[in-house]
Length: 138
Image (tube, rainbow, N blue to C red; front, side, top):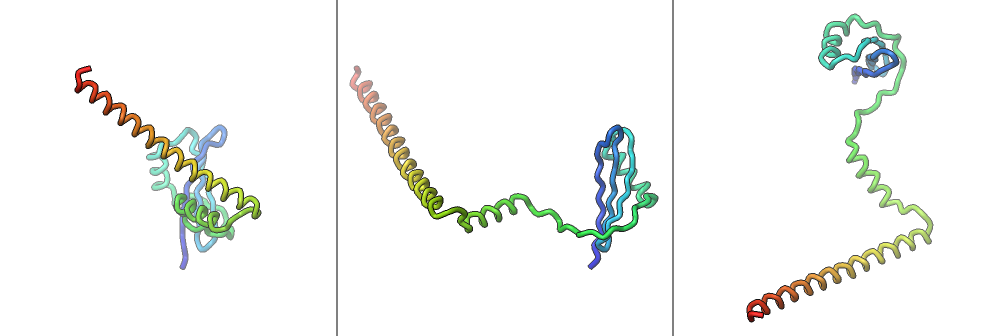
């Protein structure tokens, strides 16, 4: 199936703003360069494309590889993370150190959770004691 695509890139090339039109058809790339002068507004570029696209003189067609449409970067990142987790990289000693590090991490979490709960309980008892003292009239 034939795919036809077009692309316009506008950039600043000292001292003018330049537009590069790319036209890909049947795996062949043709390019046309247009000089805008001052920085064009979006509506000016759109108007230019509508009025002058068919007058543009494209370069001779060059064979090119057609790229697939861009993939969602978050999905790519997720897939990479899954692959890295599955392929354990490193030596046995590095894996052992990583395992030890994870165990220490879980132990630290448990200890800190217990400390937090103990502090919360102490604060609660202090508050209860103050309430009782106020109730007794002291």
